[in-house]
Length: 327
Picture: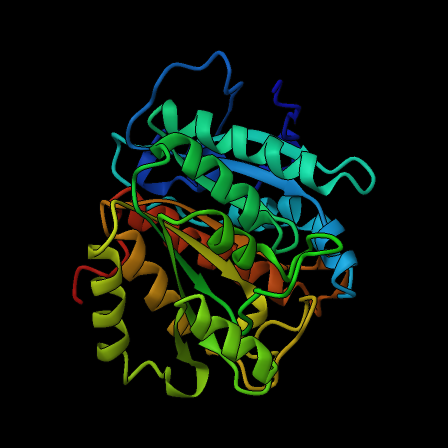
């Protein structure tokens, strides 16, 4: 398939300049290169931004719309952050996949092809959704890259299982059931599940599908050792891992601008800890963030938090300095 990527607008990458030559003073907008994924050479130690301008899955799932605006909005906030990664690393932006009308499945295939080509070029895909239907396109690309026989582990930071039936159509609530029923070499771990955010049928289906999950109420920043061990054991059982974050897992006080805001969601520090744990493993190939909805946001809080969490993934993937030298 010919990948239809819309080139990112350089205006999305702007911000304060403290120094024009001293790299230690640079911010993201001074580092990023806008490239054509088809013509660029393989580039190890590189993270590649891919936008997925799509919310058709959210519409089909009867959610609040707005996530299609997120890729460029998150870019604009990411652009302002200090760049903390080594000089041998790069950040590139290969543009946006756009969903044409209600052609969700075609857009997901396009995203999958873009992810696979990025991985083939030895880059780490950083996907900015979009509704959480982003995760299915993400999956298609990773599976295409690693092949059918490799075991794949999906780690999802989410309040919801997203394993609803897809007899009539797929949506932002069906992706992981699609994957698990179609791929015998794939396993699924969800961190942040809410007891009252999922019906009993979904809990029963999760058990039938062999889903590993952790309840939101057990996840606190001072009580992460058990979860970290569970994540590491899950990672060790697979050949490859990808990480997906649905921002509706966050407490609505921190992230009001999402499709399904949650009063009992996770604190950002918990999500940050999980991102660091998972992306520090060599088996982890890629990361996506979904369900940020700028038009539903308050004072840009969710967009900014989404950018900060994306920064955590990029910095850890590239071996950058997350902590102060005193920590």
